[in-house]
Image (cartoon, rainbow, N blue to C red; front, side, top):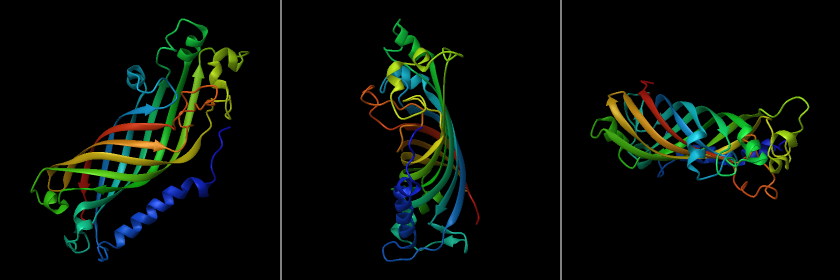
Length: 278
């Protein structure tokens, strides 16, 4: 079984990040910030899952191990105060930062790609027949920085507003694995690539146990204004997980040297954001 860290250990970066954001929200350049308005949004798009399935930086791995995800988002907009229908105090933080809270779900089917899996050998067949899945649920926040004025963008001074963001997510995951060779009476050595069977999981380096971890997220994107109260949002994001079990495959590096990295995703989303009056 994969070893899960204690909640205190696993959540330390997550808690520190939120404490930092709370401090930023309520004090900026000596000014207290209490007023804000709300925005809601939805987004979705394809993602590339970088895992122990296939080879990293391999085009076939990138093409075949593509999943899809959706996100529900809430934004805290400090440039405008909903309680008075007025602009907030004109400080730099208010006009250039937003906080985004979101819930994500993504699902990926995984296969082994690369030269080893294409070999006409027993090992090659074991790799080709080994399939995996990963269902991931995330909740967390990002701090978005807009180099251009948020006020001017809302007022229609320009229609495109680029931004970058950094955040932290709490993650729960449920992997799965299968092989057409995994029939009654077959041993793991009969069905799976032998070097994957060394590790601390259910079948050594293979395990379908669910778990939890944290992720650091970063993104670049832009807002495109389509109406006074609505934007289109396009974003490219990266999630780096602090676990190597997200895909259900984590063989001992001594027996499988390519297993050097924790799992991660690169995700392209297109979404819609609506400005609320409260």
